[in-house]
Length: 185
Image (cartoon, rainbow, N blue to C red):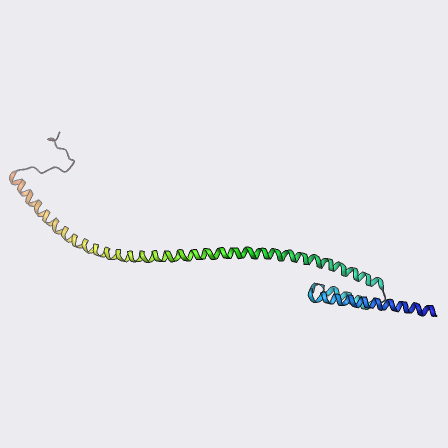
């Protein structure tokens, strides 16, 4: 019986060591579950497997192996996330440069707009002055029309007088410009 007690003590010691290792593993897995939500389900399954199979070392090894695979997957995911973060940083930097270029373009556009506004204002003044000048010219045209009308009346009166003078002196009328008479040939 003494050997059996030693064997029980040895098994008990191994069990306590195993239990202590299990508790350490559970603590480790709980810490990972706090920082990585994807590992939460794997840790929960591992805790259930460890609690349900405390005496079965083979089951514990399977759970540990499953956990190792999850850790490898997690490391791969972390590495992929690092690459994505680096790509995002590069994209952010490119966006910053583009934003700065846009700011410079906006500043240039604002200056151009201000310049165009000055040009438009001066053009508006010129249009206003031209309108006033056009109004004056219209008044002059109206006055000139009246003068032209009176000149036409005078010319008509003179033509009648000229026709009378020609008839009196028997002078033939002049042919239109560009018209050839028999005397010109």
